[in-house]
Each structure stands twice: as C-alpha cells, then as structure tokens.
Length: 312
Image 1 (cartoon, rainbow, N blue to C red):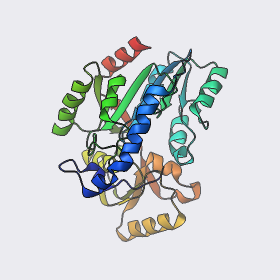
Image 2: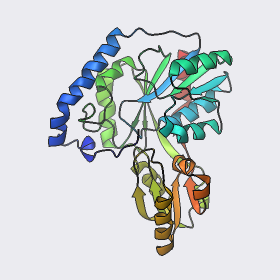
Image 3: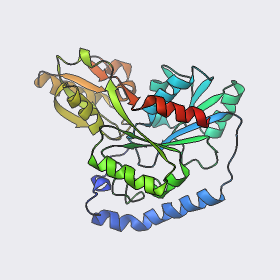
C-alpha cells in the first residue's frame, strides 16, 4: 500500500480532532478483528513456521529481521521466505531473494503449498500476523523505537492494525532503533499485558558507510519511517544537505529523479537513498545514485536465537 503516513497518528500527548472523528471507522476494524480472532479456523502445517509482522503500520524493520532470521536458520533447515504478492512490495522481494529463496504468491496458502512441493522445512513469513487462518509456531512483532504504538489508536484514527492487547497471543517483540526513555516505558507497558513475552532490541548497522563518509548527499526515500534512514546516517557521521521524502513503496518517475539530480548538482552533492528504494528504480534511472546497505543486528543475539530454537 502506497501512502503518506498522517502526522496525527503519532501525536502521543493528546488525541487530535481528526482521530476523534475517525473513531467510528476504527470501531469497524475492531469488530472485524474480534470476529476473525474468534471465528476463523486455523490451519496447521507440518512445516516449521515463523511469522514476523507488525501491529503499527509500516517502517518497523520486519524485512531486515526476516533477512537476519533466514541467514541464521538456513544453516540448519531448508528455509523459504514467504511474502504475499503485493505489486508495491517487489522491492522487498528483490532485496530478500538476492540471498534467500522467496515465494511470492497471491495467497500465503498457495505459497505454503509451493514450499511443501519444494521440500521446505522452515518457512519465515515477512508479514502475516493478521492472517488468522495460519497457526504459526512463532509470532514475532516488530516496533520502531521512535514511533512505538503511535497514538495508540486503531486505523484509521491511529496507526495500529489491531489493539496492543493482541500482544497477549504473540511470542516475541523486537524493538528496532536506538533505545530511549519512551521505549523503556513501552517495554514495561507490554510486559504488563503479556508477562510471558520475550523482548529484544536491535540496531540498524550500515555495511558500506566507509565508502560514503567523505561525500555529501541529497537524500531521498519512500519508506514507512523515513527518520530511521537519516538517523542512521547521523549516527555514522555521513553528511547530507536535504532529505526528500516520498510515500511508502513509492514508484519513482523519471521526472522525480531529474529534479533530484538537478538539486544535487546545484548543491554540489551526490544522491543517496535506501537499498529498497534503489531496487524500485528502473535500471536506466540508477546512474549517479548511491544507496546505503544496512542490516539489523539483534542485541543479545545468542539469547534471541536460543529462545527461537527452543520453540521450533
């Protein structure tokens, strides 16, 4: 889904008037979630399954975590990544399949059948926590350390796909990004909801920043939480002048790139974007554009994988 995230979604100090007006529509989503949680029959599979998803819409670090999990588990199991076939998610598919086996069908059930036919042993689902038909062995929820739960309301009044209380039925929370006072309060809050929840933190680490440190850039991206890109650059002292933000999963036009290249030339800078954005660009547009390659590193990684291995 391509969208500009409304600013009122993350107003935590007070609920905006727009959110209040949208609450009746949020009630429809709440009723739908309640029905699906209680009425839909779950399907069980012989394969081992891990689902990495989010409650907060967009920009929580799901795909980098899926990449990390696949790196680890493919040493032990014949591992496939499952992504539902959304045309706007082709960038994430390309990013993952550069290293892993990815199945990208219209439904997750079709993907599971295809994986079974290819003798898969472990399936890692990039998104799918709201897919109530599948009984996952492990359910991991990602949050961003800045946004966390936003204003705490259900879409469209807020950024949550389902109530924070849904954490009662999940196993692991991974909070990605630099930790702060708010993230510590959030951890205490969700532990009260689910005392059995295992909570881990992670950080985005650039892989090619040494090549970028001597240059100055104009940034552009179309990702769920654009601040994660700029914050990572600041942390590693990569210089930039301006930052042009586009909607999540934006399909760049030639005119967009021409304007950016002209701006970079006027500012005596180069263009820098995220790896996902770079993969969305047509190959003919990629000239003179660099990308930041990052990976997600889990703090206390040994404990993290010890717990996951015990559950599979």
